[in-house]
Length: 323
Image 1 (cartoon, rainbow, N blue to C red):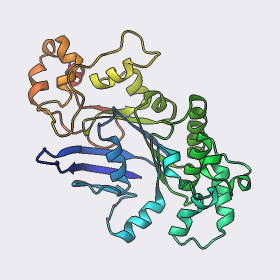
Image 2 (image 1 turned 90 degrees about the horizontal axis):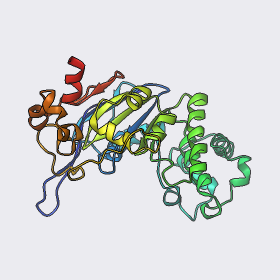
Image 3 (image 1 turned 90 degrees about the vertical axis):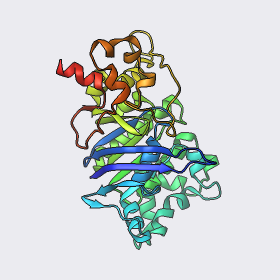
Image 4 (image 1 turned 120 degrees about the horizontal axis):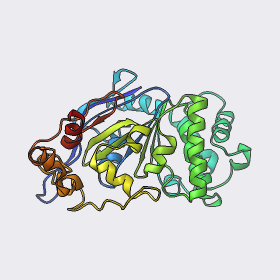
């Protein structure tokens, strides 16, 4: 459905500072009807990657393919593409115009694309699919009259109204209460089952990934560190970064892993493995005992290829497999 090949997004530095390599070589594939979770800390590049998939950020290098065709950046091509690929944003309050009714918010996409059918019926169907029933009851409401969960459903309805084939959801439940989060996640799964939608869900929450995703891609400092089936990655993580992220979940056994060093900075990517300054495996001496400590500090692991098989960009993890 969607394929990313060698994607780079670099932002120029300000006031003489070095450029920020926000996305620094990413291959990623999403199959029809599949939900892929893109997880990682804030600042790892996952939102920039998501926006580049939508054509909102033009890559510095590499390309995006949709249904086998490369994404073109002319205004006409992007307009046609965004009818098939829709964005669901994190903050429904900031995403909805407070002066627009629910009806106008959902109908906006139809009007932009010159829809010639029954607008009222199409808007009602989208609202009903998003769980706002009866839909006519919400037509004349304004965002401030809705709960947070209802506003998020309006955002989802606005994406569904154009009958997309893929949605990119950037932290879709981060601003919602725990009880409402479960409802929205169940909605995403139901839409996948009913409509055959593919989805990329961007999140820092591994619990969310476990509940909705078929596959997970763990991102660190502009690259995919580990990818594979969600059960495989989240029950038997191979990359030390994935292990650290999982260790802080409430149900995780043992003590949380406290990462040393400074948080990731795309303007200062270290030599060797980009995670090595914070790596608990290197700090504990395990990498030394495995004979890969020098490689960790000096050799950049190869960029993970696309496809759907499990992969890890870690000298220590690969040495363990070989052993």
